[in-house]
Length: 343
Image 1: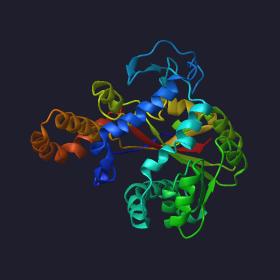
Image 2: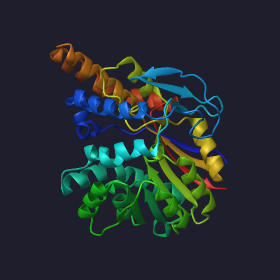
Image 3: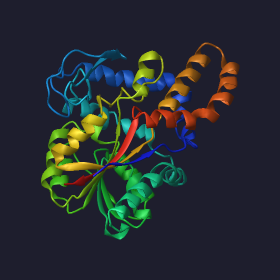
C-alpha cells in the first residue's frame, strides 16, 4: 500500500512563540554548547542508533561534534553516545525543557491550539481514513512534557494520557488541565509503560530522538499487540543541518543540544520494519527556511546592520511559506510527522 503524503503548513505566528531564538541567540547557543560539553565527555558511538550497522568517519563537524551517516540506513549519528548520564544531566538535573514551558493558562491554550491542535486533527483525520472514530482512540503519549498534545487530542474527543521524565513539566501540565492526565516517570520507565499499555495508539511528538534506550522502546512497541498505530514526529537530516554548519555563531536548535542523532527517510522505514509496522501516512513541514531567516537576521544584527535586517525581513518573510514548500517537497526538510500501522 502506498504512503499517503501531505506537505507543508503555514508558519503563521510560529516566530512569536520562539522569540528567544532571535532575542537571546547567544544565551541559547551557550545552553547548547553546555550540552555539547556533556555529550563530548561520553563514549564514542560505534554503531548506528537505528539499525546497528558499524559507523565510519564523520561526514561533517558542527559546533565541535562530528556527525556520521550510516552506510545502511542513512541515519545521522553524532560521534558520541547519548548515555544515561547525558540524559540525566540535560533532561533531569538541568531541566532543559523548562525553556519551552508556557507561563500561564492563556499562553498554554494558545500554544496548544497553534501547534498541537493541527497535529491532533491530522491524527484524527488519518484514523478516520483507517475506519476508526475519534471516540475509539485510546492514546498513550510518551515524552508528553506539559501535556500539550494530550490536551489537544482530548479536545477532539479522544482518550489520552501521558508520561514524562520532567517532574516540573508534569506538575505544570496537570495544573493547566481539568484533570491530572500526566504521570511523572523515571528515565527508563517508558519501556514498562509501553509494554503494559492497553492503548491502541502510541504517540511520541518530538520524543524518539531523545530516548537513550530507543532500541528497547522499539522492542516494547513490537511485542505489545494492543498498539495498532504509532504517531510520531522526528527531526530529520535536512537543510537546517546544512545551515547550522554555515552559521556557527547561530543557535543550533536542530543538530545540537539534546538532538544527538537525526532521522532520514530510510531510517524511519528501517525503524518501522523492526517494529513490525509500515509507514502509512507522512506529513512533511520543516522549519528550514525559518532557521535560515533566523541565522541571517542574527548575523546582520551582530554586524550592526539592524536597519538593513528590517529591510531584508520585510521582503523575505512573505516568501517563507512558499520557499519552505519547495524544501518540504524535496523530502529533505527538518521535520517529519508520520503514522505507522501494524502489519
